Amino acid sequence: MSLPEPVKVLFVCLGNICRSPSAEGVFRHAVRESGLDAQVRIDSCGTGGWHIGKAPDNRAQAKALQRGIDLSALRARQLCPDDLVVHDYVLVMDRQNLADVMAVWAEHGGTRPQLFLDFDKSEHDEVPDPYYGGDDGFEKVLDLIESASGGLLQDIRRRLV
Image (cartoon, rainbow, N blue to C red):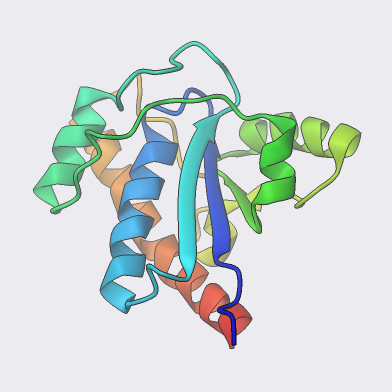
């Protein structure tokens, strides 16, 4: 008997150096802690190509590391149409990311993108971009991502049954 295909999750933000690599790292940690790492594949990308090949923002790395999550091996890449075909979840950080990815989806099809915080029960619906702010913005991003990761993990568990 062969194992089912892993569930593939893609996190998307603007440049793939703050929010989406943070989500990739946090969710990878949550999946590992839940024992589902053999059944879930996680990736991240940006809608823009300015930072291709760069490591996550130093502030994002530092704040994640304070929570035991190492982002240093991640490298930025840009969304491509095949991402919508390959991934089961395409989760964007804000409405502008959603509009950008929906434009690709409308032309190429595949998995319909949605806001990542749809999996959270809080009053927030977008993960704010912390790039131009202070360290507290990176803390808030991690808090929102951790909260939504629980809901996403529940959804994936239902899918795997």
